[in-house]
Image (cartoon, rainbow, N blue to C red; front, side, top):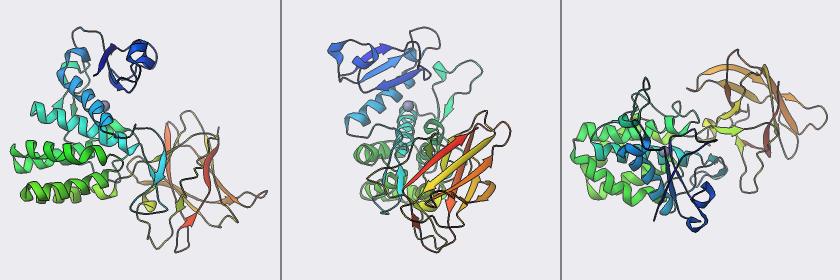
Length: 339
Ligand SMILES: [Zn+2]
């Protein structure tokens, strides 16, 4: 059962959304706990008259009903690499990619939502031309999704239309329980395809490699004074040896719109290590600046740094590394100030 309602007022920046609780969105108490689709009022160019937009939102509801996690900013320990934190908004990237790919498969077209595209705005394409991980992940699930949807579409392009059905059946089997990490989904899909269609599995394995799906990781969002502490997580700063590969890709994201300086601190259980390295990177992972740590004189367990925000920057991404060969665990990381 799915309730259908109209988008209204504040917060309705997306033009079509699926929500877990219809009652919480003003659709009446008797719909409490029932998933809902919220669409624009009918009319030319409306999402409620675009079957592709409708199918996209229904895929969200299908995944949620099969136990996929609610995409939200949170972190958890990686199953594959204990001690490495995973930002679970990656589940949002996977959902958007599946919603787009499944819709494109039904439409047999990589260009979608033309019926509701705003004048002058290009319709969305699932091709994800050239998008590769880790550079392609910028923290915006709709855009980042094109790495995965593009990889799936690559298989269709190379193997032919027969791949639509094979991929959809295999995804229906593995997707709902592998929606935490792109690389886990990619691996599960490889195993499933090997059983069903070894030829398609070989194409998929090649595409996974080309698109870097094993190196996908979303940046972790930091906000002013909100701490990052979690009893479940022991975050680490990678060392030179690189034995925690996903930790070395960890990027932190801070909104800096209109700010001139940013100050960030990392707190340790004991003495803060000297010479931490902070690399500021752009959305594609290219280094824009580097800064070494400054120890907080008062506590000595806090290492912090200050960075001049480039003009017109709206957000900054940075990475941390340390000069030791092994990773260093830390307790907390936070934005101290943005001025
Ligand atoms: Zn969506």
